[in-house]
Image 1 (cartoon, each protein chain N blue to C red):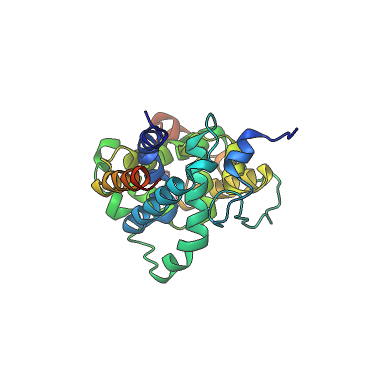
Image 2 (tube, rainbow over the protein chains, first blue to last red; image 1 turned 90 degrees about the horizontal axis):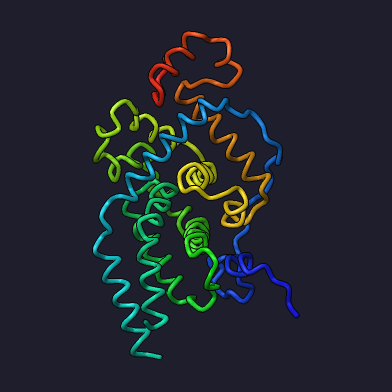
Length: 82
Length: 187
């Protein structure tokens, strides 16, 4: 009986052949690991508000048409082929 | 609904956030959409390796960042456009934010390393937990935390928000900040 963390296996499927698929990538973990130079809560809140604003700005843009056609194309190929 | 159709719908629902992440780490609008496109194709091709019931968003973000770091980063460096960065994609509704000096913020963000920007967006903007971010980035939670702290500290420094130490005693700065909540500028 396998005990696998479903989340972990979802993110890091072991049989992934494509190295860019979850699992393969290892970026350096040379950081000190310690929590250093924490900002005070107000500074963090200020930075957080800006980060959200930057991110939300992109997220709220209309989705470029290319993605809709790409998905339609993938779906057709899949449905027809298999 | 077929499996493909429901996967497609779920994927579609995640695309805006996936783009947000792509533009954020890639700092180049056109390349960001290529990155999203590559991610979508990989996700589709590897649909079977996604475990239903787990977070599709985290899975997609993982694919995207792995693709970026293994295939895009070098190319991006070649076309380094440090100042043009976010501006093209993001110049649109800056005014809506009013007091938020977003352009300065974006310029500062662009000067961080990819890893720092990534962790800021994952945790500060996308709402992932430290654990999820660690899983997405394939590193330890402690790494995420220290990277995040350094990224915040650098941003604060560049934007003159000041370090916690420098900030503490400066009553005027504190007063300005609290009276204009959300404003960055404390020159």
